[in-house]
Image (cartoon, helix red, strand yellow):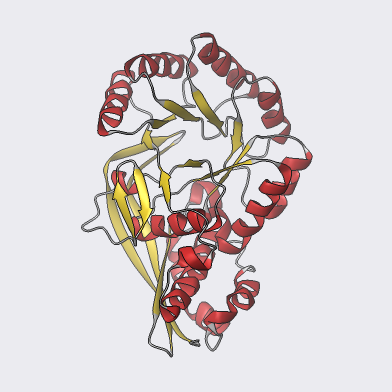
Length: 343
């Protein structure tokens, strides 16, 4: 196969259709970094990094400056020996989104050289998925209106952001459930609750018959005891998101019996660590969900091929292609709302 000859990083700015509001954070533009890995066979693999200061402590300008280092690290490596490449990229601990983009671009280049897809290289386990779509934190009436619109679009899994005001969250969630009967909900607090408030919230939901599939990251990422407290007092499965970035985090969560699901995001882990987290989850009977930061269709393409290639994921939060104002769709997958299929 081809040897890597050049790695190029390019900034890609994309506006959100409307401000995207999660606990203590509002985004109006996505600043992503496209990664192009060229080989001497003529193939060019493409990946995308979606940096997050809130989750990973990443700064866009600092990541762009890694271009020369990445060339020094990987030029002359062979794409067919991608695991050898991953041994080098695994050291990019402080820049996991770039790690993910570079690793995927190597897999993508190899796939193009072989005349196949990253999905096949990852294992080709499954061919389609059903994504959710997200309601961000807004005034209550707007949240309800957004949820109804999402339901009418055909989505039957609705993700609802909470975590800034528990009283408003309870009211909004009860009204959303009333207006979108037949849907399942992923409720994501983005670390916004105390353990006691999180338990109060889910008990109120359960008392009113709200069908919550996953209660995601109710407490601060470092409070593993708090996660465990919520899990053991919640009628709904609890997922870790910000609490799980590496395979070491996964092992710690398993050891502490803290969660029922891992929400894997390639932007937190990179491909190499995500593969390890999947195996830990399967070994420990932990459910799998895959999510995204603010990726365009190029970035979501990575997660689609990874999750369906590896297999075993139950929930998919890959809706940012519906939230961003992309000029054109560039992913190598087919969208039939709410279903994504391998092309």
